[in-house]
Image 1 (spheres, rainbow, N blue to C red):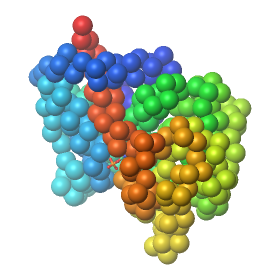
Image 2 (cartoon, helix red, strand yellow):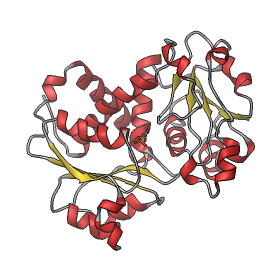
Image 3 (cartoon, rainbow, N blue to C red):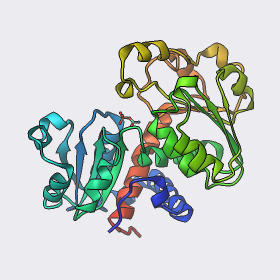
Length: 306
Ligand code: CP
């Protein structure tokens, strides 16, 4: 039985196989419509979500399976003090696979140790978000035709942004990927990513503050929101929240084939006027999230479709 806690739980070959499967699902959805008949997915969400929870549920329904779960800690027995370890032992009696989102880093890993079913980390605190990374990789590969030989700008809250941490972990394994890390001083990438992932892998990267300076050299721009829920005080959040706003004027500085990605939700960091730019890929990215989660469920449940 396999779990998914981080993109590093998958080899590059396995990652590529999941992306290939997602492409086949996109092209031939009917072929997969009954693949998980009789199987159940549990979504255990201790923290708010729109995309991750609902795309997991849509993915399982598209595969002919069923879904159950809760969307907040308050509506589960966590509110009475139940541990994630006990909860997953119980859920293992009800479902075949579980996706867990939790505000505490490592909580899905703790659950996986006591689980009788595959557990997927659907986002743990400021740590990792591997299924967003699968979504991002599928989007990049579909838009640019490759995952190697790219210069990617990661902009915004690089300190708390778990999607950024997971994406860097995944992309360092592809050749000739250059990172431009764009953030205010207070929201720079944590040391455990800069030293243990980027420097350890001899990865080419630079850290800059001004988005305008970085834009002309990028193949991809990955915007992120300032993570209000991870700040210790409101004052710091208010000071930081509008540090970056991508608008039409800034887009003029970017190459004509530079796609803009964002894991969403967006707050103010991308002006709505950018949505009509053909380079805005963030809503397409949402659709890729369903295909890739379908591919992941099939992979972890070891369901083969001929
Ligand atoms: N991208 C993402 O994780 O969105 P949600 O928080 O809505 O799930």
